[in-house]
Image 1 (cartoon, rainbow over the protein chains, first blue to last red):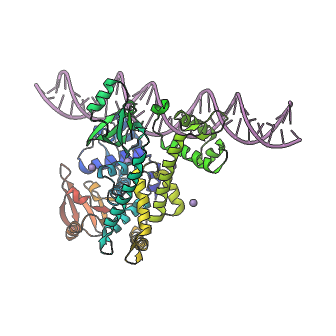
Image 2 (cartoon, protein in one colour):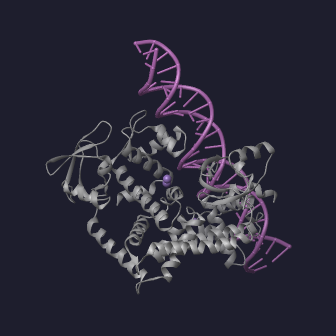
Image 3 (spheres, each protein chain N blue to C red):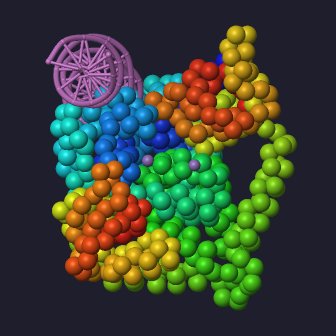
Length: 236
Length: 236
DNA sequence: GGTAAAACTTAGACATGCCTAACTTTTACC
DNA sequence: GGTAAAAGTTAGGCATGTCTAAGTTTTACC
Ligand SMILES: [Mn+2]
Ligand SMILES: [Mn+2]
Ligand SMILES: [Mn+2]
Ligand SMILES: [Mn+2]
């Protein structure tokens, strides 16, 4: 039980630092601060700060310029976080049929908001749907058909009157279609050279902690947009 | 329209302020700052600050000491947030069978992490399970039985205390006890044939320079395990 | 309508966690 | 081994969103 207490003391950002360190410990022989910074998309000085905080909580061992390793307590918490992430991700992609890559991005956010009981139930629900068939036909097929039927119907209604909105207003996981570009000619040209043309579908993959920049996916490519640029793109 | 371009993403805290204001607007004739503070468990000065931020985003109308009301845009966003919360809450309590009150608490956290697509799918999954029966018996009954069966088993094994961790995290010289094997049936079978059964003590003798494979000792025998295999063994 | 209480706002402090810039240590290579 | 590059740290700044304490406006009531 004491471990659950300390787990709750970790902010979601530091849960991610711990998880990243555990992931690296499992696959590399040495953990580089720079690698943590790359994966978490922060500057090295932020990693140093995180390492100091994690050490204060007895989750890692570490000294300046020295090697980084999870303590036993750190390993225990890592496993809990890992299992949460895995259960949520697989639930999103297998049962809710969210696009695989999007499921990973969203699971990274949701993992910090669910209790162990919820992730355990998601795991069991996923397993249940895998192993139980419904009157001969697989239940997943029926569920898939149900999603598709409802999606088509909601598309019918959406087509009627799409309310315009700005790309900068979308959150991670949401998508839209480019309607128009604003701004001066040079900036519009730059955006179009990135593949952002009228009618293109855009998916927001991730938004940096302070809201700038945002990572989007257009024509299968990932782009990084400043908020000011995203504010020039009108969507429908 | 001019302020359209100044819209920024709402932080999850401000999403909650907006949602609380919308909820109050629906049920009270006048919105009291003090009531928002009570519901959100913050001090009145924090509410004032939030009101100023929401007004800057054109989500509410408001002046010092004056009445508070959602703008049209505020109402649109409130509706999106409301639907997300409702879908998540009902999914948690109806489909994952999380305690009603706990579901409300968790939905309040999860709502900020899910995309509209995810909450829509949660809604549809919930609806699907309500309306589709599986071979006579309701599917929810089967799902419930599945949850209960697994819960009982995990209660049996949990006893109390030591928190699990992965064998792959042990370093040379460290030991632990096998708690559970993960992975597909064939791999689990292979590991069990090596003598890796529940309750067995394991000692890590040596880890290869690149971290893979690791040499362990079980039942007095030395075994060589790949890192990927060690990652399937949950220890205590 | 005067006055006290309640409601609300403002100012300033503080914690978090990010950043940049300058500095220190380690490493890589000749 | 000497030196430059890379890696990592420290210091200081900034945005967010909370709080306390003090000030202002509104309300309630005589
Ligand atoms: Mn992927
Ligand atoms: Mn995460
Ligand atoms: Mn309740
Ligand atoms: Mn909430």
